[in-house]
Image (cartoon, rainbow, N blue to C red; front, side, top):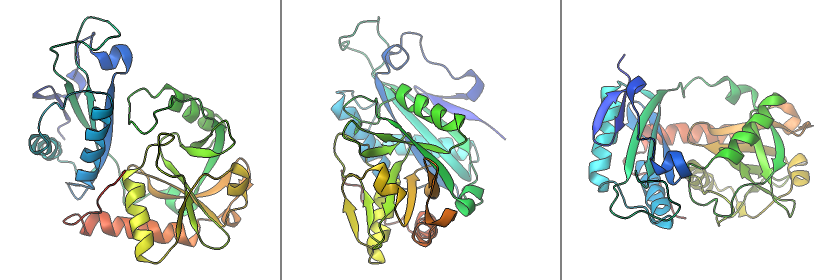
Length: 292
């Protein structure tokens, strides 16, 4: 099977893909990224991801590497050349290459890198068993709404979870409220069957998958409250789940050692996961619009 990457105008073997040592993504984490699901050889929620990419670039005053129509063609071509049926497409854009200086350089072109990875979305044992989550202090910068490549806090959170055998870490801010997961959005279901997830502001990255999950929930008349919640409220929740482009909708069965939904995947999370898979496979001709 071929394994190619795209780097600044060229498709190259993945193991030889490289950027300049003075690329600002490497020097300063001065860049942004997106992760797009691939199912059946097709992108899922493509325009939503590209809308968010454009927003992140704009917030950091990084020029687009090219027009959207051209970027889409390259995305599809990389998927085709790698014969990718199920997996993810990773897109990273940095400010570009320049002598190391904190100030924005002039006259540089953005760096564009894309890679793919195979991943089986159809058979996911964790969806059948549920996953464990632990909470950690929120130590990230204040603009979490920008999908920046500066991910050291998330790395530390994921490692803290891994050390205790948990799948994900939920971050808790100074006021005692859950913001989101290290690489996912956090959701609970109250005793009354209300879905609760944090409101979209600078404190979290609003998920593309979470956006679709919310729309699907509304289609089946589930009520959603966008507000903060505490770990204590989550411990008492009827259900909990997380959403992301790599996990879709994944049930949570334990938080900080507290059993959720009697230790089994909840019915609402399971239903929403099934609904999302159907949406991702069959409804991409008219996907849900992403709105921040």
